[in-house]
Image (cartoon, rainbow, N blue to C red; front, side, top):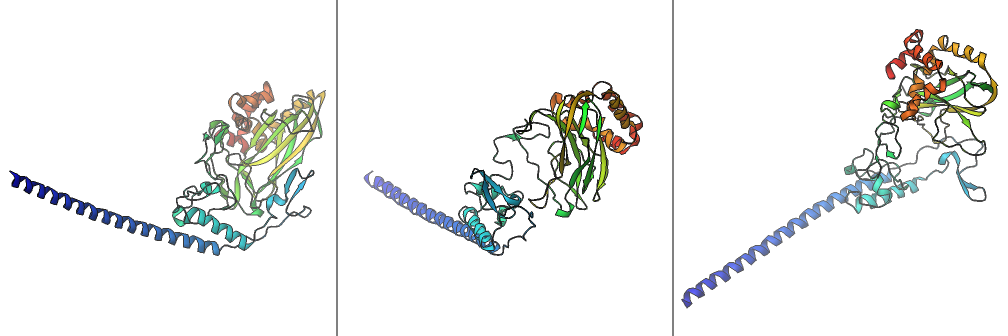
Length: 405
């Protein structure tokens, strides 16, 4: 029995020793594999870093843009140092090649060299590198636009807000890409060429608006989910979209007005006209309800109602504004004469009263979609409907309203 027990103990000890040897060997093999994988990963990271750094060394500053003629250059302060002014929207604050390359190299080391391309860096790197790159692949290890400038975000990945739905809702995050921007000479511009200086309460009047480099053929109704959902699109280098006209009463000329009240008048003009050459559209305003000072503005919009983008930061957007004094006297007889114009020459532009005004006011959301009718009042609203179904369908604007609204 003693001998048998010895044999069993000897065999067990041998097996245990053999198992230990196997375990140690397996550990060494595993460790060797980890070392090998780590070496391969490190080598891959080094190659990515080297490629990115080489790309940084090839960067050149963009050409200098034209600057405004009378503005003080650079960034400066006014109002005893309390207000900072950036001349030409920062276009005059240029960067040298060495500064640009150094900024790029720093971004690479923060986001590629130290984080294996996973964009683990803090601050601006979280938004600008890796997969949050606005379409660029993290594998390319290519610094994104604005690298090193402290970009807060370029998408909604890290936003705490709910996604925007295409309807008029605030406190949302819009993920729609900006889209296409044209060359400076092809960017839209707009001018109000004619408007009265004074009108009576509820007196109809007209405004004439000229647009250039704007093809007025895109309008996605905000009330149907078309708000901020379409990227900017060019046709032969020209923005496709429409333009808006709105009038509101100013309570004061000493401070900026509250932004949320609906205006007294708002139309979006889409008539399948416009283009590279400037032309003019007549806008019929059915009247303003209160005496005081009115602010009437026109501005271009792309397919999703945003002011079109521009090549340079110091270009003036496509907008214009006038102020009109509204007096307490009635304009009764003149109103009818003004409204009659909606049935004649104003088919291209004034059909916006019947159709586009509803589309424009859809942007106000909810019950405000009825603002178009409230603005015109009573028979005027029916007159708007007649324009869509009657003789106005012969005009370009009428055709557009039937399709888009």
